[in-house]
Length: 55
Image 1 (cartoon, one colour):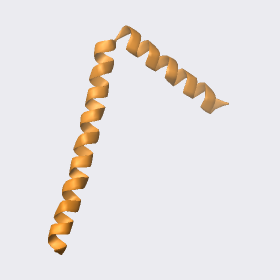
Image 2: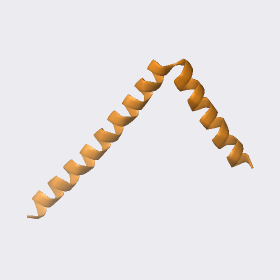
Image 3: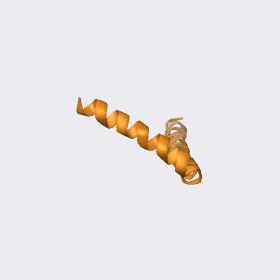
C-alpha cells in the first residue's frame, strides 16, 4: 500500500516538475546522464588497464 502511494506520488511529482520547470528537469536528466557516462567510462578504463596488465 505504501509502495503504491509513493510510486504514484513520485510519478505525479515528475509530471509536475517537467510541466512547470522543463529547463530544470532537462538539466537534472543531463546531469544524471553525464554521471552515468563518467561511471561507465571509469569501469571501462579499469577493465582496459586490468587486461593490459595481465597480457
